[in-house]
Length: 413
Ligand code: HEM
Image (cartoon, rainbow, N blue to C red; front, side, top):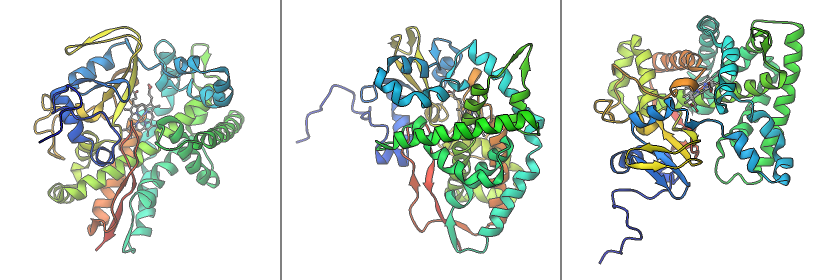
């Protein structure tokens, strides 16, 4: 005899653990079940709403009742003791444009986007090709390597550091600092006392960037920090702490996510030999292939908002004050929008995925990520035709908002 159900939910609705080992390894069946059976889902374990349909996610991203302002309210809720402990983290995070609503967001976005014009980004093409080619030169003679550690990680790390004007000698320190910021922002599981150490990394990083701001104010150069120092709107300009905070955001946003685009992308291609063969035969398909990777298994699993007002969505009323996760992975496989959504098709057209978000907060670094992603994957596919997955198993990072691999062992047969 089977056990009685422990609650009254339809059995098709899975339990609420988003971060089980199985769902970290492959979250898509879980999100698909919810999209079908309870698309606007109250998750009791995380005490938040999870939104799974494409049209709902887009509605939310267009609706100013879904606020991005979640650092200040969290700070307001802290006790005096917690504030004393966490002040340096909050000082930086409160100025990130991704955590601000209009009008503050509008002002920051206008000033900051000066550093990301299409011309400024395209100017980095030759340097990205060089970085990628040098790495592949070193890997081509080996019998195997870790595609994350040895390839996908260093590319964005080098590129974003150089774009910002960070001297080459200081690059290695950025790996540790970036890992620290990742823990503070993404809240990886089981980190416990890591939080205190992570904050120390952030303090060091902010102090270091402050010195760079001073340096480039005295000696302007062609880089992001100089652009931010010089950016003005009428008589408005960015204050130094705003420049430092948003540079931390670029380092962080430009780093792990792009690593994950390359890592997830190569894994998906190797897992779909027909699509890989097609790309080898027609290298011109690299651009739509990268878009399909962003749709099919992109680096951003979900975005977070807080409700400043009650909202009706589907058959539910979401009360003011509740937290909402907009699940991009579920929206990007919504059969109402994408034909055969679980099929990986590098020629998919149209492909209006929301892997970079949508609306006011649409990823500011999308063109940087696309530049690096296309160059890196194109070079891997062309120059290492004998690349295979394994023999060691892949290892995923167990985080809520992002999807990425810690290790992707590959062999050259
Ligand atoms: C494949 C790589 C990347 C992915 C998947 C990605 C994804 C995203 C997403 C989903 C958002 C919206 C967040 C929200 O609405 O709450 C976002 C915002 C942002 N991203 Fe990216 N990103 C990537 C690469 C980059 C790079 C390379 C940079 C910088 C060099 C960057 C900088 C930013 C910034 C500054 C924002 C905030 C924009 C705003 O709030 O107005 N990202 N990104």
